[in-house]
Image (cartoon, rainbow, N blue to C red):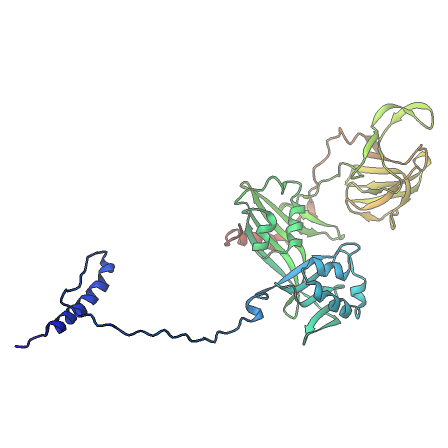
Length: 433
């Protein structure tokens, strides 16, 4: 028989209890433990040691420049390279060197309004690469090479790829499109196309969905610019709105429903965006020049000389010149039987002449006081089969639809982009709070 010394016995008991005590929390059991009064506790010597540790220093890529992104800006009238760099988030200390490099490119000195510029920028504002498609055949780049900016201009042939994206509205349109990596230019086109059906300031609902198919142009596998929206669907408050882009055989383009109805209003309400009516359509008005009572078969809009006058609908110029009391006048032929006339113009817009095709909203002339006019204003007439009618009381078509052979051509050309919208309906949506 072996005999255990009391001290050894106590030590053994503590060693046996420890594993049991460590396992108890896993079974949700609590217990009280004590120390045997006979246990001898020996003091354990301790020593404090302070030793410096060598920690790795944080790199720039771990802090200020943790990521980079592509920024796209559409060039506005009056823009310069400096103003675009500022809008794209390039740091001020970078801009002087970039502008100096940009002087080597004549295209960067004469920016074309309406085109876009792309910049790859770090989160701290350092420019890595700038791309500007000066034309469909010329690409200008500014790239950082060994710490210096170098500008290059070369001929390119771009590859167009249709891009498909979906998003869900959680707060705003642009928050959702940003989260889904949809460019702002495409979001703006979407808002403009559906502006006649959806008020994007007041009508948006949490959970609304959007799907877009748009053009993206690449060179050597790199994105150069985005183009137009090819098809889109916006589901607002449970109602789906769809649009597809179509260009007809004569070069006219626009957005239509998948069934061929134009989404553009057939006629603008006024040929002047901001003006007041100084004289309405009436069968009896005292003419200020002729000093006699006669019918006024049009609407007069008071506006300063030189105010731009716009076409109220797509049309062909039927007449542009001088016509008796009308003075300088432009007559436009729209879809039969409609036509419009714009009189007392001070001058015509460049290129406006008989046979010229104009689009809705195009500038066709400028307000004046030519002909029988006492002061600057626009005399506007709306004609049906050649007879003046009051456009404010006339029930006008909301939009025109494609018919016959043109509609068949439309369906064949737009079917692939409608099919992509169907695919996007079943995809996972990108959401953003």
